[in-house]
Amino acid sequence: MHVVRAEPDDWPRVRDLRLRALLDAPDAFGSTHAQEATEVEDEWRSWMTGWSNASDQALFAGVNHGDWIGIVVGVGWRRDRQLAHMYAMWVDPSARRQGAGRALVEAVTGWARDLAFRRMELRVADGNPGALALYRGCGFIDTGEREPLREGSQTRVMLMSRPL
View (tube, rainbow, N blue to C red):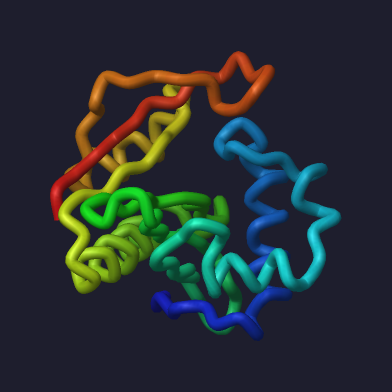
């Protein structure tokens, strides 16, 4: 398995991977499969080129024998040049506990460090012990903050942070 930085022309693969993630783990993301399944090409390209108000953005994919098996997005928002955020982290169930998650986290934290961000944050569902173990093993700590996953959701997410 190796990690690649996705380019805008990779949007069909990114779309397919993201939609698989939303179906596999519907209570792990701030969005839903129904919300994203109708997005058009330009919206998918923005995953690599930058969302509105992003100062910097990168999407990394885990690739195993040509198959895209994992995804993570790093974003720095214009309002805080010290802080980077990690979003959309997901690894296909068939590739879990084999180092793909750690490799993706290392890719996105390395990207953020290279851009001189000082800290990275992520949100993770309280009831996701596998993800919590991965993030703790990568140096993230629970800040104590909790919030709903998305409007109307009973799932709570915790904010985790680590210095870069």
